[in-house]
Image (cartoon, rainbow, N blue to C red; front, top):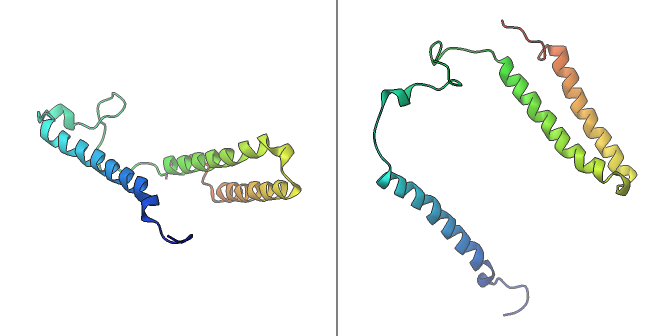
Length: 126
């Protein structure tokens, strides 16, 4: 074969890995269907709320502030994930790396200021 031509044998390990992963996943599902016990108990169908008895109906509305707080937590975690390697390698990056990270921190700061201005961080029920 000439160099640069398509060589299917190079991708054989990938194909084998895909086949094995598919067989492993489907095998687990099939074995579970065959061997899993099917004993139904009314207690198993009660929603679990941190060991407490359920309160209210399952379709009851709850405060959206929990979602906003969770999203802020994820944004903060992503920011830290990007800041830590930058801080560790600070001595080895150029001035461009400093300005790019400053721009990134500015974007995150603009998002936080926006959330403060719209009142997303105030904890009140409506």
